Image (cartoon, rainbow, N blue to C red):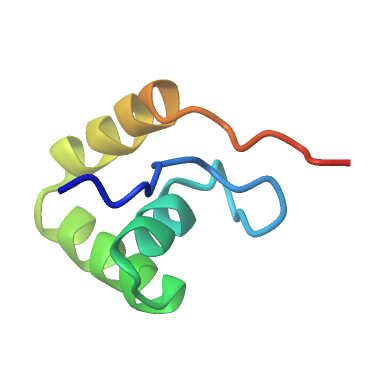
Amino acid sequence: MYSGKKLRRPVDRKMIAGVCAALADYFGLDVTVVRLAYVAISLITVFPGFVFYIIAWLVIPKEENNY
């Protein structure tokens, strides 16, 4: 059941590092919804939300340019 989707941080649609855009692309969601959910979760769990973002930034590879 491999769908062929890869989790990659986009180079053109990022606000900070592209983590929320990568998650939105992977799960087929609107990036605004993912960003709002991340902000809401981060406000509730301040430190873990920040740590998750930093770890995701380091773990999720950047999308390659196809120029």
